Amino acid sequence: MGNHPVIGYIVWALLFGALFAWEGLALSGISGTVPTLSATFRVIMRYPFGRWALFALWLWFGWHIFIRGWHFLLRA
Amino acid sequence: MITPAEISVIVGYVLLMGFLAVGLRALHRLPPGTDARRLSRAAARADRGWRRLVRHLLATALGGYLVLMAILVIYYAAAARSTAHYLESVLKSAATGCALLVAISAPLFVAASWLTDYRRHRAGPGTVDSPPDYRSAGDHPATPADPSAPE
Image: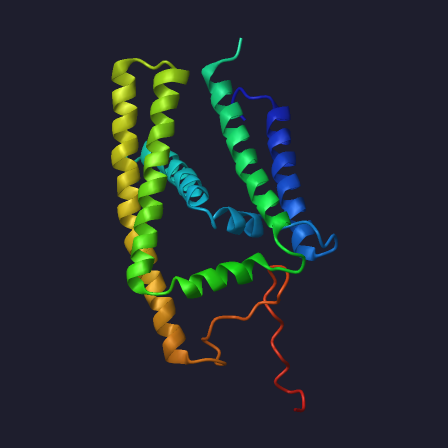
């Protein structure tokens, strides 16, 4: 766990749990008025700037994961 | 005292929530019973054609790339007040790395689109390989009809 307090990981777990719970509520159709995340993104992507922003977010994520944090396999 | 890292988190949160708010507001402006998926499919039908797809893809990739570069320049130069050397190295990594990601993902997206289109044309409507039908509301695929049921 390194030097980070456990409460920090618990908060992250709760946040992601809430995200999945909200998506599950939307997918289950119990509420009927809760849009899914994909439906929300679909609406955003109807506009050019929304598409640019989402693509920029995707690029930023990929840049951090695959470029900045890149290490060759088996490198000492 | 707010640190640059906290500023970036706050700005990112505000931007994300802003986009979601715009999306939700646009969603609620649709007439009742309108499915956003059908709207996007109708838009896709109206915007059909490989040349338009490539133009659409290039516009999205270039726009997203420029938006990210602008945000990074503003953040690292203004908010984080990085040194010139660090700023140069980060922006160089971002510019080349993101260009590499676009160069990899864009041809893959075109190839996947071609393959999907090819399979759809080859399978024809109403076959197993044809694209799944979706209900008018929600994201659930439609339940296929029971093949053993009497007609």
